[in-house]
Image (cartoon, rainbow, N blue to C red; front, side, top):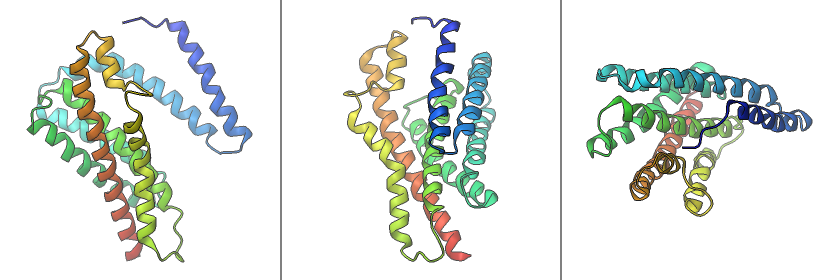
Length: 230
C-alpha cells in the first residue's frame, strides 16, 4: 500500500477551510461544528491507531460486546443534541440503534459471515452503529420541524424515513460505476482477492441498507409516539 507522507496531512487541513468559509459566508451556522468535528475526528483516529492492535486482541466476549454498546451510547449522545429534548432523544436513539444494529450483527454471526472475534466484531459493529447514527440524526432533524398544528403525522414520518434512506439507496445505485466502496478498496489495496472483496462488500452494502431503514423506522415511531402522548 502506498504510504502517505505526514506532511501531506497539512493539505487536508487546508481543504477543510473550504466548507468552514462557505458556512460563515452563507451563514449556515455549522462552521464551529465542522471545526470541532474535524479536530475530534483527527484525535480519535490517532488514538485508535495506537490502540487498535490491543482492541483486536481482546478475547473476552463481554468486553467486546461492551465496547460495541459503548459505541452505541456515544452515538446516541451525539444525535441527542439534534432532538428537541436531550434525555428523551438519547433514549430513543439508543433503543433504535441498539435494536437495528443487534439484529444485523447477530445475523452476520449466526450465518457465519464473520467469526465471533474482536478483530471482526468491532469494525463491523462500529460501521453499523455509525450508519444507524446518521439515519437517526436525519430523522430527528426532519421531525424537529413538526409543530403542534401539524395533523398529518403519517406523511411526515414517511418523509423522515425516506430522507434518511436516500443516501444509502443512491449509493447502491452507483456502486461500482461512480465509486469503489471503502471495504472493497481497502481489501484490494491490502492485496486481497477482488472477488472475495466484492462478496464482503455486497454483504456490507445490503446490511447497511437494512440498518438505515430499521433505525429510521424505529426512531420515527418512538419519536412520534412520544409526541402524541405529550
